Image (cartoon, rainbow, N blue to C red; front, top):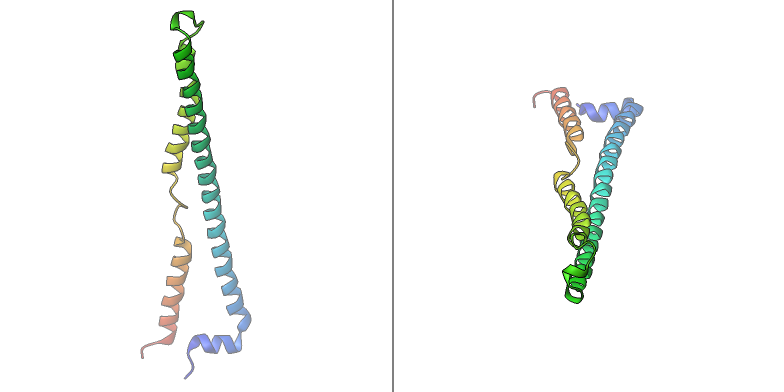
Length: 129
């Protein structure tokens, strides 16, 4: 006696092709979700790097100003402390968002559930051996 899958493939191949097309749709949706998450994480990592470099550069300039000019002669010495903090805060925000967004939610769960359901259906169709 032939296995039900082989019998289905021989008698109605279009049904199996349609079912495999459903698997392809599930995989493409999961891949699109994963690509979107990776793209977001790459943008956040770039924001962290640019913000960190900008904060370090502004802090270096502020330290050079403090080394050259006395604080009494500066019109707004508080600005030297605040200027590096703004890009540093932006980098910290990017870092917090980057850590929070780990990966696609429920990665491959729909595909796994469909595969488990299909395997259970095949076992039931095959009957006891």
